Image (cartoon, rainbow, N blue to C red; front, side):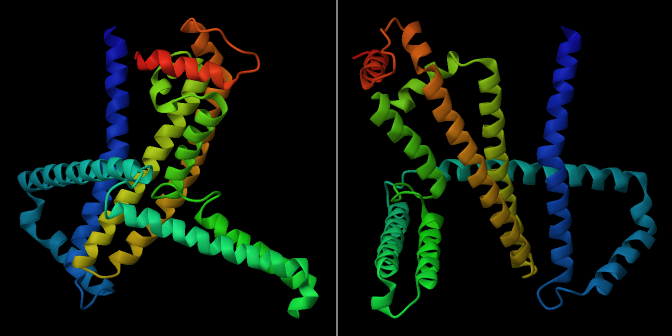
Length: 300
């Protein structure tokens, strides 16, 4: 048991170091560099190099007490920055899947719906032109290219009319809608019980996908923290924008995998949950099975 606990503590320490401290050290370093460069001379590398040499040449900085104090302060500040990024990442993860039922978030969801409606109207117009290109003074190839471009623009907004703040929220919402439509199942209510009957391999895949999704949200949070350094040195906003964009792309890809795995778990193991609850199972599954599970779990 002591060996197991020691190994667990080592693994937790390694994860803490990799997820919080090391990225935090990089951010603290960027903060110091941004503060030294300033807004007027953001690319003065020679001036920064001279400042670093002056610090290295200062005998007072070589004292053991000074080095230990600086190292302790750096680690503490890095850990604080890491915890801030982790908390912000958790908020982003929740916001991505948010319903946007309150202002001003509601306005963002409505704006996405309007964009999708306009893109749909443009797609329909392009299809109408492609159906009779001669009447619109164009060629069939050009008309089909316009259709593909219009379709790509709409797909970038969402596969279906948006119902949530972000495409990630639409992915998870669509899984819940399919569960209700196909099986009559309240997935939010049934998921904790469904998780209990899943095989270990599928649970491992779901956990890995969830971790990837959380890591991507945390990466986006780091991008926002880097963008804040623009207060000291404006090029930091460019670095932050790149990190935020990459984090969003990664989060969307991870959410796609996670949503597909959740739907897979529902398709393959809803019957197992029903049987464990003592509910007769239709083969193939019908909405009556999911409705019976939902009624039982609501306990009303």
